[in-house]
Image 1 (spheres, rainbow, N blue to C red):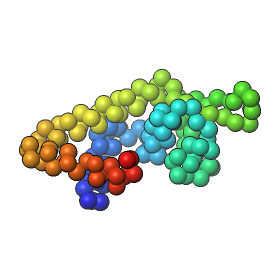
Image 2: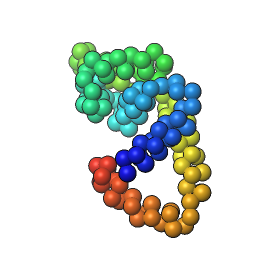
Image 3: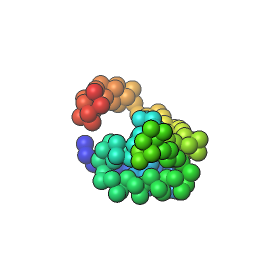
Image 4: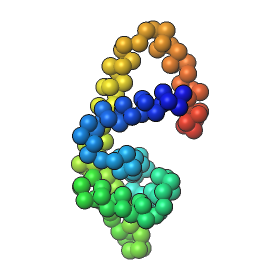
Length: 132
């Protein structure tokens, strides 16, 4: 299971960004900001399970590429929140589209029995991943 998930994840990552313009940690942080909306750097560090200095470097790299923007809180200027930019949204949309296309093509090669087995296994895999 571990090996199959690792291989599939690697293939999805490579297909989503064939030029490897962003590291996996950058893509993960960008996707988390997109999913969670404006988020403080401290909260983003918690969500990404990294130390604050690491998230500061990650955010700086994403800002340099124009994918995130940091905005100061109106009430407390010491607090900054990050949000995705239109370029960040477009990158994520393209990445997700490419991964979905890859999976669609791979799934189309499977038999009806294999597709049914995957469908039946999904709830258990989701629980394993902590999604449910």
